[in-house]
Image (cartoon, rainbow, N blue to C red; front, side, top):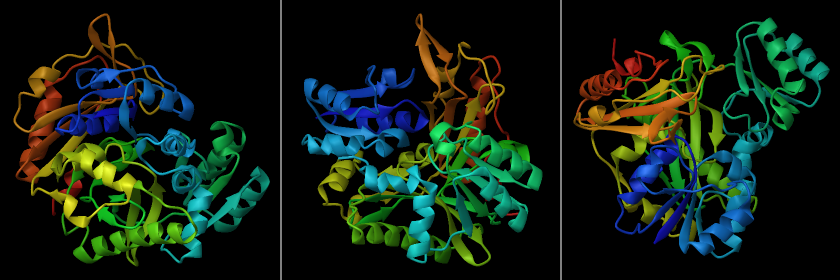
Length: 423
């Protein structure tokens, strides 16, 4: 079948890589795609938040499946428009996507059904938010309610930092997304990401992974979209009991949404803090994580197209997916200055040499083709992923591959995965 994949990042490059491995894939179109997806299918210019435009393209090109990678089209209801047109789609409708599109909606859902999460308050004006801050003090987490391209969350260690973050939201830094602000108790403990496939009834948890959000070594500096990730997560960091608790929380979310008339199908992403009281929800996302996808899909043993179609059709069964025993480590190469301002258009070399190393795949995130050359086109440029029988070997291969790739301003953390080392 012909498939249309929406998105342009490392997540979409990893999804595209898995899709073209399926014998069911005839032609793959990626809108808008990047420099790497151009080698896997056909990049096309398309407004991916316009459901009618997506449907028109799918029909014109005989696409029988639309896969929605990023959150914005999901929140915009593109999946609803595609399904209404009679085309199979992977991704929740707008009602389900609110678990990511509105942090207030997500928190209210968790509170209503007694799901473990941080205490919080929601505010629509600056004065009320600042008054709550004065009552609660710091540290505290400040979140723009809507989608803010991964930049709407501030972990404020002082009241001054929180005050500034609140004022930035209400001053319009994040547009409409910041017109409502959620202030949340700061939880402590290791973090763990749990992605799951679901058709609205059956849920298949994917392998757990651990992302590294901070820009600098030793988890310092500003939050980013992710500087690296590894999978699985060793038992000294997340026990079997904790994993079972996270899976049960996500099952309950799908069930409670169904009880409210919302059939949630697609991928549900749970971000958890492993507190002394047990796992608590940091956030839910309505799609595959980025960069978690880049270490989860390479370890999956299944035909991804079959899984996507089963999620949409309501025919998902737990035996459709299994996982190999290998480890995967992915290091994100970024442009100098990320997550702040950075330059684009730097020529990239060495990817072919890097991928000659055993088990190494380089997923493109922020790249483009310019006059036949591959150049940087974003803050997170490449996800250098290595798969190997042991964690140590996977990590060593990933960093060896990073050394072979070059572009002006190349930046990356050298401590990705070190949490997995039992000290």
